[in-house]
Image (cartoon, rainbow, N blue to C red):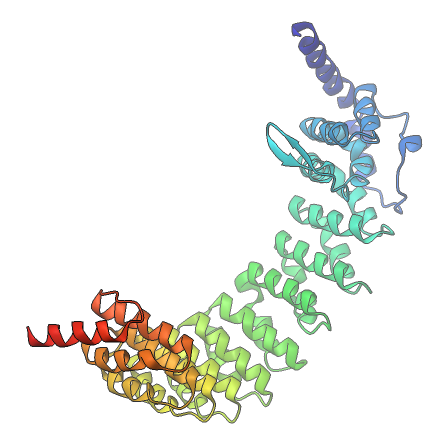
Length: 417
């Protein structure tokens, strides 16, 4: 066993010493553009040093553990494994699961790790593979480029945002987010209006990672483009949370499209900026119920007492969802002045409103709500009963289940003490 270990160590030493002679070739190759041709066992270059070649051959083994092990060995070789990069790339889509003492892995995972360890010298081979014929390889290639973060990959990835495949466009957006290069800002903003929701999400996530560098262009995008692009721009600005973005979002509450206005209320709920309180109060009167719902939710997150009276009024909104979220918002604010209106809302004919009011009273924890909540234990809606029980437990720290009589007995006893 000891001799085998020494032999393996010697092989790896030779691997490093022999391959180092070819680094110059590798770097020259890295500076050249070439079209992608999927490599095979028969196309292994004779220029590859023998120790590296031995591992590359194993990448084509029928045994997944052998393929994964070879990729890992090549990764440990680092930059000296540069000439193996094309062969590692063809392994990227390999999802064959392997379990070992170090946990679960796949040949594809080990190939990506190896390429990341090789780093910049592998980038040109990866860039050429962005044009591979199969989607699985292309997506993994772009993920790898995102992890290496070499500037040369930015433009090819930006071009991939125009690909016919939504899967490829999404992968390109995600990779550009990982790279963090400001050149991607405008192309990613354009992708906020993509026809595919996954691409929109990928572009949004990437722009959030880019942070303040994307803020000013996003503010401009908030006033132009398709409704989807404007809504997504609002979402990203809500995550970035700069002072300028809050003011731009407030202005966008007047957008002519209700879907955009709803997205703006959600974004303002992320900022939790008190400057948005009065505009959000105004939005409680919006003609669109989804916008009113979003405004109520946002006001609950801001937790400003100026919103209490408008939210109390919203408990009687003609749309039950708006009334319910107004109750939720009052629960978040936890102000005693809301107790009586919330108790009154327990008698609303709409179950959703009663549920929200009961939950809100549990959050406020005012003893005045105990008796009305006990009465609610005979409600026809089981969710209303559940919320009433939860609220009673929060207020009293007692637990009599849904037995209304036990609650009544306890309440009368506690009142007489």
